[in-house]
Image (tube, rainbow, N blue to C red):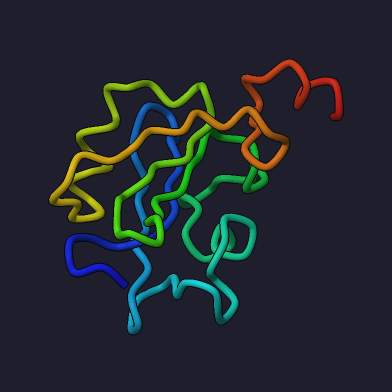
Length: 118
């Protein structure tokens, strides 16, 4: 893992950033265990009283290229005002590449395609 930040996942829930950097001793551990992706982690971290599925809220992921460049993949409904918080929460020392991901993987309740599936 790069020394200048952590991989991990995040959600935007009711205009609040919920960030979960992956650590060896934390809640999320990249590529192993039962909490390394949004779906598996949600049951452990969702806000108290929340009955929404993991894919209801806008979400994203912080990762690194094979050259160590940070990349933020995120649903198009994640407002850019959250970028600085994401950078801070994941300890990124370099400005990340931002990849708006319109794929099914990041769909949320704000996307028409997600609504049509429900």
